[in-house]
Length: 383
Image (cartoon, rainbow, N blue to C red; front, side, top):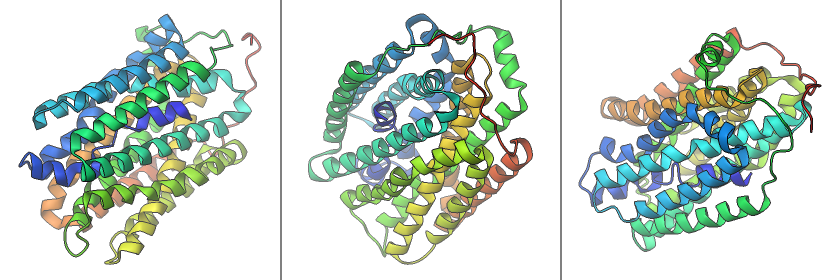
């Protein structure tokens, strides 16, 4: 959970700051949205190579080292004097994030018995939710009360503290397993596996919808008739806490009923929440965002557990490829709604989000197996 917290406390922390950054740097909505898309592009580029680092140094070393590197890059982002420099430091943050994201999921599936990996993955996702809420809240309040650079200073302090806790508490791997060998054969095997390919597509779609929703809804709520302040926009992400509280139930559902059943239910929640944001009432929009976020977190638990479950070998590489597709989806979700906003404002963005969710449902229903029986722990692997 701490590793999940560390991975997401910074990644989307500029979302509530976007209207302020647009005013500060006299930039367009698209230009400031690059502070969200730049780190997701970096994650997509770096994620497939995490497995090689894990082979050489071990999963624990990669997780802890990435947490410290991310905190340092966050501190340096506070020194940016222009929007391009800020975007560059955000890109650097994204380059070190996969060491937390991919390595932690691989760590779970190597250290936990297969019958309990769904619950462990859901706990990790809950950590990411809490991290995302903390980053947006802390960033929004610091920017509103002090300055936008102070938000990065505060987040870096939290990051260093979390990294130190991981260094102190995260156990060394106990199991001797073969991870990614980095060969072309391993890449080809994963890219030809129908279950894995479908899961990569699901990951792409889900982060696409999440980033689209929470990057552009601040522009809706910062404008009349809502006219929310930067601090209030940061508070908006308290809607994530509902998802943090209930996501562990998704893990039990995965272990009991399989990944596809949980994902289908999650997509229903996402669609319902998306439609509620069209209401002209702030409380209804907040409820809609809570429902949408809960559905997204359920789907993230299902898809990330699904890819690790179906990777019979070279698991870190498989998860790295999933992370690449996942964050490419986030990049698309941060960029495409910018054009739609100018065409049809928020309703056009919601139509895009629901369209992507329907595509996700079609992919999972067609290619994911109805149930994913949990295999026994390999006999040739020694604790």
